[in-house]
Length: 213
Image (tube, rainbow, N blue to C red; front, top):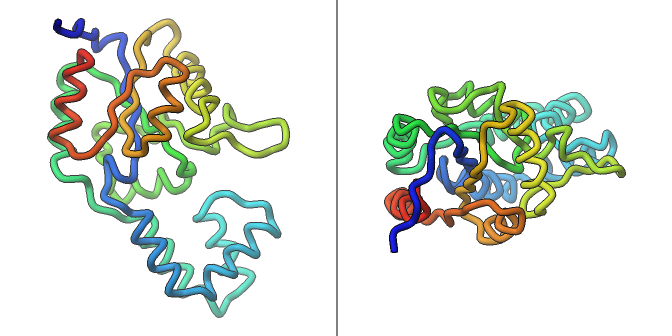
């Protein structure tokens, strides 16, 4: 039995960044930071001291509080905000965009990191906007204790729906998540997202077709 075809006009696809749109930027950054423990320790201290969540802001604070680490902080910032696109992903995005689908980023990264990736052109700016995206530090995700809900918390995905509906009232009825982490897939399903567990671009396109895209 064939899956009912989705209407692109009422369907929005939410994309994870690392491991889906980009090759594993996080793993490379973590390996580099493991080799520079003096920077890692300084980052942890300023994060706690100033109650910071954003990596770029933390590195800026390190450069001020620990001027001897400014050069390392700058190198790590560059490493954290540059990446290589996943094989075949640009063509896949173009194909889906041409079909009429709307895209949004749905990531645990922060606003500054996302904007830096756009500026660096690591993320294809022709498909993603600096004005319409959803990150962990979006005000919708702030809890009463001041912390933010992130993936895989179903609250993150429920709030993502609210954000989309605020930006595009009464437009989208179908929400799709493409993510490489199974726990995020499970979290999204709890609030009625259709999902694709990303392994490679060809498999992703096949699985999108299976759910009607």
